[in-house]
Image 1 (cartoon, rainbow, N blue to C red):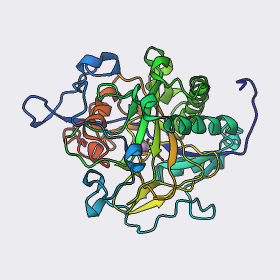
Image 2 (cartoon, rainbow, N blue to C red; image 1 turned 30 degrees about the horizontal axis):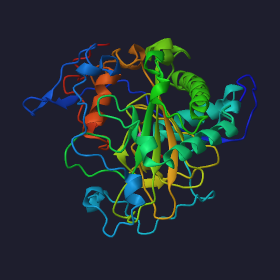
Image 3 (tube, protein in one colour; image 1 turned 180 degrees about the vertical axis):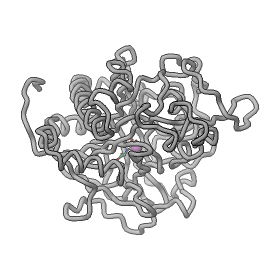
Image 4 (cartoon, rainbow, N blue to C red; image 1 turned 45 degrees about the horizontal axis):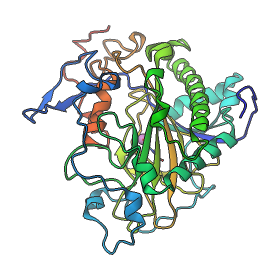
Length: 411
Ligand code: OGA
Ligand code: NI
């Protein structure tokens, strides 16, 4: 497909926005296994520094492909996927088909927004503050490219198992074909397989780690990555100016040209007991903005809104984005069903991974101090990579008592 071919489309995109601007982490010390606070160091952990990130080459238990389980005519549902009752979906019947008229998350026309429509800008602002999720239409990414990308990945997951195992991943970098998130032995697992790959920074983009089949998948994903980085840049401008900052400021704080971009393709096989399991446990994404392309035929994504979980209706050609503190970093999860598998592409637009992430100086004051001490994205992401998806426990446990209104390092 041709990049210059600037066509407008009426497709819809789901947006959730996340500026992970202030975080502190606690991590398990590998040697004494005691929870201890880890000092903020700027240069110690990361994909760039694979030997020092503290994660092993091996998973703690043999990997079981969920897709193989789903296709094996199980007589009993495996215990390792049964969530404790309080965490189950709470619905006995899951209708997997989208209901276009059902309540949905806010919809924003990006084309209109960029033509100067203040109402659209305000709608994004409100969605980020109240919800942390919204959908965008007229986003500039061609619907054919979106469909082709999703279908290429569906074909990949439908390849024989041997063709996929070549790309089997490890907790060290997570790149490749995987079936769990987190390295805790005996953890209750999620009902999905996935594929994780890097687009940016360029030194992490390694086409040999992308699947070679179907034959067009590398080329397609290359184009998809370029288009989504462009969309990410445009969205950053909106969020930045909505925060009262200069348009370029958020992007600059993310490292300017050196932002990160990676993608997790999720494959949720049919599940014989969807009322006992989850496709993806509650979590908030660790990065900057997530642009999610959901399956347009199968629902599954739910967003927490207060005490309820709202099922997102996948409007044709939709994506997703998140935020923090002023902007909500929304907790979300995925439910599964027994009728139809589901494929989604979560594209993560992230800050440069080794720079300290902290609030913009203009946004903090003695009456509105930072909630968390600075840390790097590499450090923050280590949580989900070791402990797996655990709601918002990472963020919540890091609110620092050291940062009170009397003790503000940035004011
Ligand atoms: C994710 C995610 C949602 C989905 O990959 O982080 O939240 O709909 N995916 O698959
Ligand atoms: Ni997510």
